[in-house]
Length: 241
Image (cartoon, rainbow, N blue to C red; front, side, top):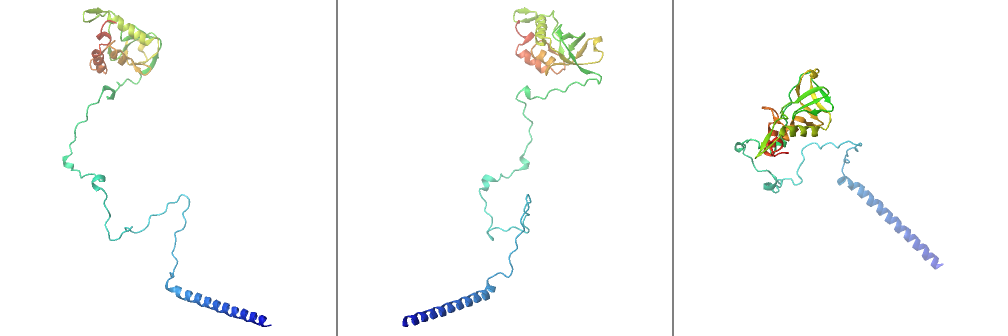
């Protein structure tokens, strides 16, 4: 009986202790709520709404302040990054340098043709001279090239050789029966016509003059090509071939 009474007394003491601790917790919570008005913000901060897909966030309004207020921005290696000051008064315009070679020169403008002239394909051309050929009943002189007649002879050092016949043979070998495209008038079959012609993408007159099988017409577009052929001793300007 004594042990049972002691156990009951301990349980009552434990209950009073729990009640006391619970009361102290309620008092502490009340003090915290009462004092929160001194450190909690009166209003909650506002956050921008979430962005939709593909929408860019707008730039902030107002000036952007430095992270270190009151201190000037640092200048890093200004002598290496920033360009030196330029005195405009000391600038002088000079002429452009000449091209490194003739390949960089612009091609001469083409001669305007009458409106009724058309590009015509002439099949199976045959050279009858160094810059004259016949095809489909028409005789055409290559425009811009001076013909070398078949009877002409050329001299190189002490040798005399039939350069006119060799020039005609070289022209025929280059043609090989292929079609030439020439700009001709509609009634060109009635007389001999001087016309510009091409074989594929190659200008016929330029090929003849550059290889020395014809000379350039005075004031024409093949003057430089003839100078190159003379310097290289090609065609009629070189040794017998």
